[in-house]
Image (cartoon, rainbow, N blue to C red):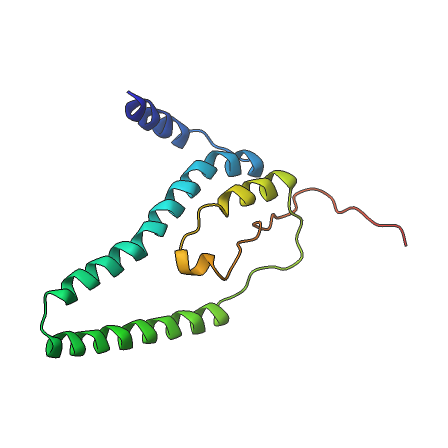
Length: 138
């Protein structure tokens, strides 16, 4: 019953135009958490599948396959790092709401990658200003 109700609610929300960024952030938050948990499961599943597959092979073919997998993994990691540095065009020093900061605290409880979680923390997403800019006193 809950799955059917959630599916109907999701279909109805498609036809509602949400313009407020805070409302959009709150509505998309459960989906972000679900996607993060699914991404977190990918790495252990792939590693366990590789180990199980390599355990059934003889030493010679597993050595060749292991070296190929390592070369493939290292090359794709280097390419991803280079593209990340080149394409990093995120705006700096933008305002962050307290609600977004609190949701990021909860979002950080569910890392996308278990290895990445050991070394990196995700910060709040920058918001674009829609109102007039406040002037500060000199």
